[in-house]
Length: 182
Image 1: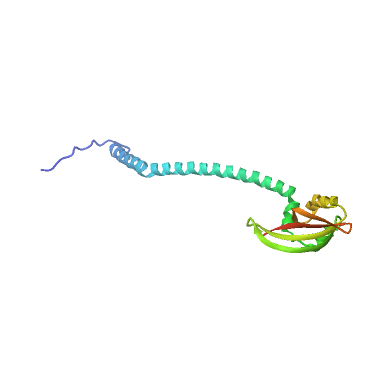
Image 2: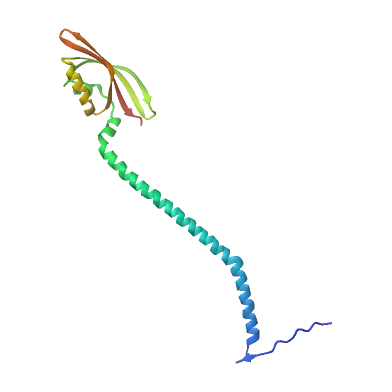
């Protein structure tokens, strides 16, 4: 036995079947909605998540860039203030130029190399034992005050041995120079 489906009424206007076109449009609309729900909606959701992550990352990057700009300005200011010290760490200790510098205060009789080592992984530290003669102890203290004006980073260690000999004062002290390791 055959199942008979009812026939749809045929409503035509200008030779176009309106009911048949309405059913085709309705089927097209349902397929479009299914595609929208299953294909396009997840893509839009993913797009919104990516967009949200982009803006969060952009905000973080802007904060980091602002911090970098502030630190760069601080670095440039510190470099301007400490340019002489930075250059001093790059200079090698020269015994002859040190003798010329200290000749204003005392007469250096001998500079002996003691040892050399790495200081805090960034600097080379060289130690020297310096023997000098001078007229008065005050000239040594003037020398200590002016040692910061040399082209090197120098450090004088105490105790300093003062000995009087033939009207002059013999002086023995330890001197260290620092240089940045390349």
